[in-house]
Amino acid sequence: MKNELNVALIQTNLVWEQPKVNREHIESFLKAVSKEADIVFLPEMFSSGFTMNPERVAESMLGTTVEWMKNWSIKLDSAVAGSLVIEEEGKFYNRFVWVNTDGSIHYYNKKHLFTLAGEDQVYQEGDLDGIIQFKGWNVCLRVCYDLRFPVWARNTKDYDLLVYVANWPAPRIHAWDTLLQARAIENMSYAVGVNRVGEDAKNNQYPGHSAVYDCLGATKGLAGKTEGITETTLNKKDQDIIRTQLNFLSDRDSFLLQ
Image (cartoon, rainbow, N blue to C red):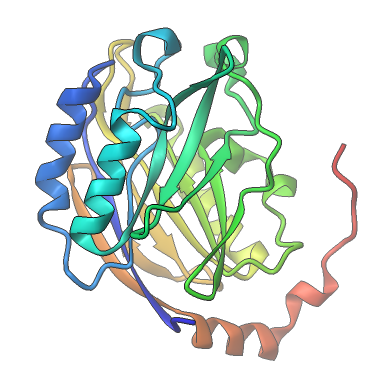
């Protein structure tokens, strides 16, 4: 078990539906990640941008981008995680892929598909809980629109870290800031959010605001509106002490998801 986790958030511009170009661009940031990093987080659909044309960019779990993630995980001696378009058995998924240095992989398929953009028409809804284990930490994986649904993130399984990767646009960035902080507070958990910057082919503007909050909602790391790397250290013992002292999670409601 590792008491401290060093996390690196890469906030970058994405070139529309150009996986090779995006991988090469992201590499310039990966090369600058500190040697202390345990996890490197990339945005939602980091290889393509938030496209509703999955057939143009989809790969398998044995494809180029996942192999690229494996190679960088080894080079950095850290986990590498972010979402990309995956095709399986004729269905497309917005999949949050987590690659460990030993080549093992965890993944979570986005549960709440963004109907406003028609994501539900071209992608398959996920049915996994998204809880994984990493170095003694329980980590909850979520993608973008999932942030608006607090029941889906409710900490009923005692996770220690909640992570959202996103392509969250400028007109609703206040919601991103507010909801990410709220998810940390209500779940008594570190919350990490990684957003992109730049403009996509639909003229949507993305202002970044990648951030890390502790279990009381205090800011541990905050990116601006430009490309860059945000690194911070999370301390499990400190969080466990606060949880024990305040004990708010013991009063959480019981419910069933249907």
